[in-house]
Image 1: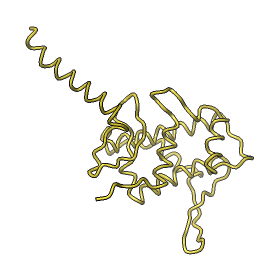
Image 2 (image 1 turned 135 degrees about the vertical axis):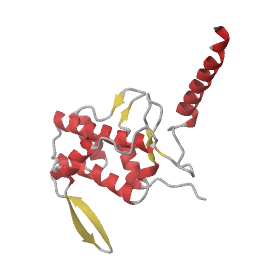
Image 3 (image 1 turned 60 degrees about the horizontal axis):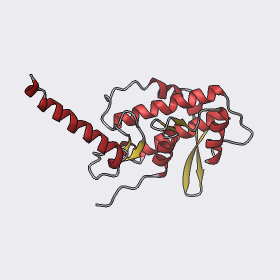
Length: 189
């Protein structure tokens, strides 16, 4: 069986959520200028569109809502998650799309303008990854201090950590030490 390949939409969602690196304490979208630069570099924000502190906050809220969903994909939550933050965007005008036919293909384009159109592109990528089946393989690392988003390429979709070499080894070492403490505890009584 071939190793699953990360589709473009899933890769974009992962890159977006990973703009906040919890281990390093670095947020690539912390200011209106950084926010605009990140989306412009990906061709998703026109040069004339200005971003604000409110846009930074809305983007961070969406990013963390997606991270919660991706933690749930890794078994860290219930199916009945609080989807209110994500659904707020879906209910807003920024999540309305127009179907267009182009050649032999069709595309969905956001009807919103300005920065709302950019947020709609994120939601569209989420929808595309759900539709192509890659969403279930997108996960946030089970290490609470990390939560880096990765595409689970394991055959049985059982990956829990972004890297077995770092987060996975730390988790296994913690489990080992806890077992050793539990075994030693009855002897010291």
